[in-house]
Image 1 (tube, rainbow, N blue to C red):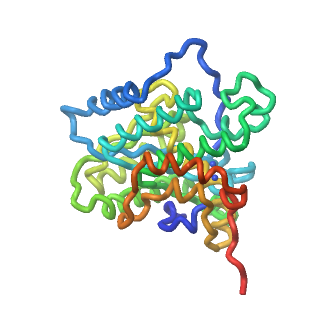
Image 2 (image 1 turned 60 degrees about the vertical axis):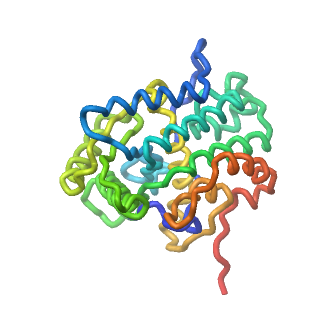
Length: 314
């Protein structure tokens, strides 16, 4: 069991979902409108507890507890944590990128479906070229990486083969909350504000397991004040969940190879955008500047951008 890596060199891409169907008449939001919707949602906490830090998390590779189906060998649960002020700025940038490319919202599975891109005229990515796809993805990563990554990874295949009897997803959630706790101590050492968790809707068993582990952790860490499952396509809080989907899918793609092999793998260029605010000693940089550099990064060769290189043996 591991939390998200503390070094991008150990990072390795992410989770299938149902195909998105674009509503016939969906009003296009401006970045400021999206930020205002987020602020309105965040204000709902007023009068209950003061929440300053919000975690947005998503799962990837959790479709088979027996780890037999492809992609289920190393489930991931993770996303980003940030304060309400920074999340509002995030929403402005993220909506700006979506509007720039004419995309209603981002889910990695739909983006990654090359068959739809080439043959499905209803896909928002229909007939996109490689450079446009890569520039779009890097620009989103530049926005997402302004927040602090949190998450957990589990070698479920090894867990099952050893005959472990614990609920594997309880193990994943415990590691996740432990990681959040440690991340807050590193990035917000003097912060005593309440922390809220926002997650995309899931099945009842998943929610029940999350609630159980959350209740256990909230007794240990009183700042863990609340959680909510929202409709990622309708709720005004949905936008940061798109960033959680991106990083969770990114990590899960190579998680099993990294965990089973026991070796750290070099990060690809995309990871340096997604995880740039991982180290509290490093400044997260200006989002506008990172968005501008996304185009330059996207023009590099495929290997430079995405290939995970194993350390050479001497």
